[in-house]
Image 1 (cartoon, rainbow, N blue to C red):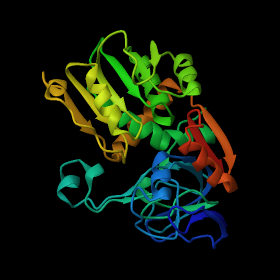
Image 2 (cartoon, rainbow, N blue to C red):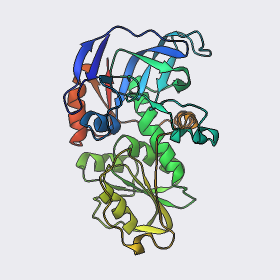
Image 3 (cartoon, rainbow, N blue to C red):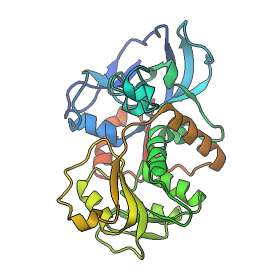
Length: 327
């Protein structure tokens, strides 16, 4: 099979011909039809996240058809269209798993980080990381739901919005353009802060009531802010316009340092929270929401061999929303 392989962090991915893997007892062999490209891939590629194994096949927003399954796999059959997200497997035994917080599992393994991912023609999934997908979407539209959608959904629910609350989004890409739609479907006004002209245009198209730069003053305070850009500076900026009792949610797996925060910016019970990974239930709930509302998923599709080009474009903020690789 063809695969784009990370052999050294900071160096271009290398196109390799590798053997098609064979599934073990609890694994599922999937023929990849689409794989989304995520900022987490970029952080691993550039070394901002330490390597856990090399060589490595990146990619954790994987859509494909089941080829064959291991002997301990049930409920999944050859030919099924399935998706696999960032969370590959959990131990089920640590204190976090026992408390229903498997996203913090001490022994979790992640797709495209601890195990090979979807920048390839075939992929081995764990039986617990395979999900049936909603109909009426293209495979290239489904891929971004599996991380951009899932992490966005977890962050959106963590914000704790109530009726009439305004949501602010800092950074606007794969996750944020889906969260904007979640919030609008549920009746919330949305402010978007981004410096990219094409991101601003997309935010207006999807129903934002205010779109500006991070330095701009919004028309009102907001009750919650989700910070998707990997910038600690934006966490501080979000606090400047946050209503009393509001929450800023840091959504990335990596960010630059947060500048000094004056006490008055967190006074009146303002809070800052991070989001780490997701649970299997987050995936199921997001996919159910996608079935109910049918999101507009903005994608740019590239052949697998152009993965390096896509990562460079993502770094330069040239991707309008979601980039997807197709073998």
